[in-house]
Length: 353
Image (cartoon, rainbow, N blue to C red; front, top):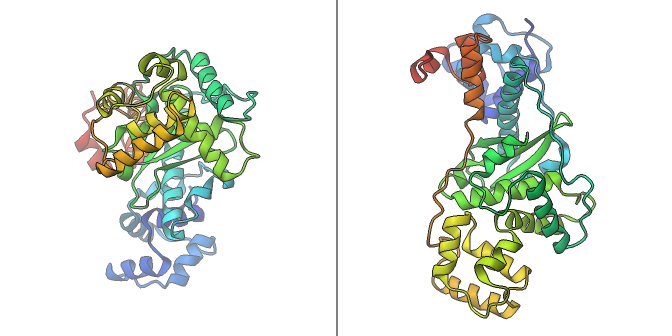
């Protein structure tokens, strides 16, 4: 196997360590190499020996075989727009962590001969205004056979339809973003740090990012794209037909307790329900503004009352991992690699029968 220079740079970015920082950590371990020397490794001008590979893997938190895996992942550049307001270092870290997680996921599917083929159910659906976005959400529910019932698990729903969902951890304000990998794999990235204790917000973010992947809005400005994806997420979580059933077709007031009860069932925030109620003209603009004035005054804008307690996640990767182990398609060592763990750590955490 040949050392792949790009993998070293990727591992360093995932760790958020600069060239000088890596050189300093190596020096602490008794190996004096300059940042220029490490740069030569990353550029492919020279290759580290096995001892150096071991040191690099320990410092950067990856297994040594990470540096020899040529399974490459490329993201569509246009989707980086949501990371532009954060530091270059953190943006690169988020992107590299996401790429690595997807690479391991797709490699596992390849080992199991599982074909991932995404079909956009709205590829020919024309988007012109909010009503067409609402209709697009209804069409997707129809094609994916969701009926009008509450969606129990949005992440599992996306995974079932070949949209990969990767959860990362970052202290930036980013909730999530989406992209197309290798020109054919739709991917949604969610920030666990921001969303893990707010299931309703995680659901909203996942479906908002789905909107970026399936709606025909590429030629629109960023503000309009965001508006339409917000509406799309709300329409999927709380369809117009269901809103009329639950709220009636015209209201002059809305009760916080009523909205809280709906939040607990449909997994959509109270504020999003009110926003949608305005958009579908159940309430007037003035009623909408009055509600948010009251909501702000009560201190609920950032910390809503009532909780949605549904589970939002997917165990598909782990299920496939243990399937590959059970069928002896991969070894314990390979399973640990795919799970981004040391073998001893993987053995300790997982009992394989």
